[in-house]
Length: 262
Image 1 (cartoon, rainbow, N blue to C red):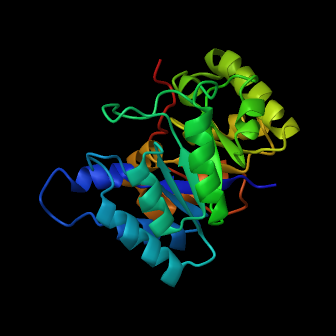
Image 2: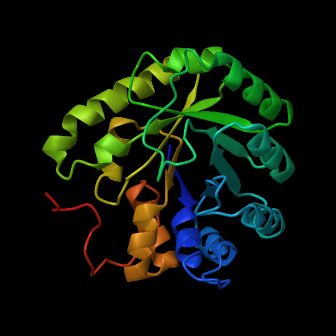
């Protein structure tokens, strides 16, 4: 199977929000990424709207429904009542629940499911009753997938930050082994497996080789960084190629994000 690429456009929204201007348009960039072959779009609307805004949620959803009905829409967030209502109104393909505190700069840990069962089961039940697939953001810990299954999740998303923070194959080996064990535990539990955080063209093929049944990767920071060099369309093609998708991409002439940075 080919691992599918979902483009996270939060970094694009953060760039736009530096000025009181409507560009770069998050919706336009998302549309260009989909036209270049991305399988889906991911957003993480936080309560303070420092990245994606509530208005973006509706606009991106409408664009997907009209222009790309065969593509996926993934919304990430903490399951407050406000978030749950927003997701229900947006009707995405998938919601990825994360345990973020509102003050966090970015997601940096997975769920401690034990102790949060009631919160998660309530949210998951509501989403699934509306036909929305639910993924839980988890750490590389092979004891967690069975708990994710018990609260009703359809998938887990492996937090790959510690893996992505290592800049050579040798230093990544230990983190990769933990991710592989967790993915295999999820598969045994009957869960689909996604992954995301600090994935690059350099480390992505290594992750997919270790977890060939990886269904989806959500990537934002590295795609946005590479797009400054190659443009969004070519960057999507390069990342699709890194996912094992047989797509023709130009040979990159610029640097590789995440390579040789030790």
